[in-house]
Length: 262
Ligand SMILES: [Ca+2]
Ligand SMILES: [Ca+2]
Ligand SMILES: [Ca+2]
Image (cartoon, rainbow, N blue to C red; front, side, top):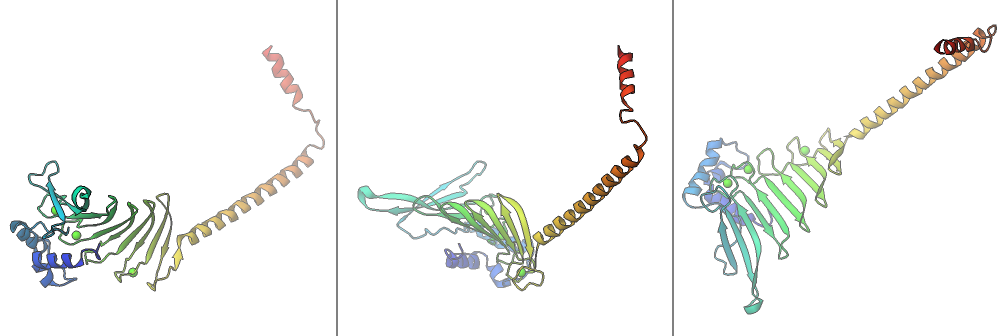
């Protein structure tokens, strides 16, 4: 998405959110300092649109309201294509103000087949995009997330046929992944850590799994050895103890019980 709206985004952010631009990237701002420009934008009637349609004759705009919204909070932009009877329109871009604060915070684009292409979102409503979603053949393929609020993603989620396959995380804020999580059927299967942050995995948890399996094998072998020893000793004792006794010494007892029952 960053490649789709870079100029529009920059322009909107630096006109609607001037305080944010002056503060500079990476500068910590209070929540009030961040929201003040947004409030000013709303008062000026600017909902911080990220769909491209203004001044375009080949675009059709529809505004609607979701339940509970007193004013339109969903905008759909349609592309108008063809001439005469061939004329048709298809949904190109949809943006929504999900928290009803007057600022659009989720925007998604579509191709002419109606498949989702990309989505960007300001999921914590601080005026900065923090989630970038890429779709492939209509399925979610990749989600980049900015968790530390510096405007750059530090978590990357990869999907195969819509299913989560891998997560990479940047935990030391150098812009490169250092934790890997591998998923199968949506379940975490293994994790890897780049402990010295050189970009290479130093340890997979499968090492721990292998160690555990080896230890279990050792314990099982020890148990088996003890069982074999005990069985051998029992056999030897039995051979010694039964040498002078009759082989069917229990037969009279069972016969006696049987007789009592009758
Ligand atoms: Ca909003
Ligand atoms: Ca945000
Ligand atoms: Ca890192």
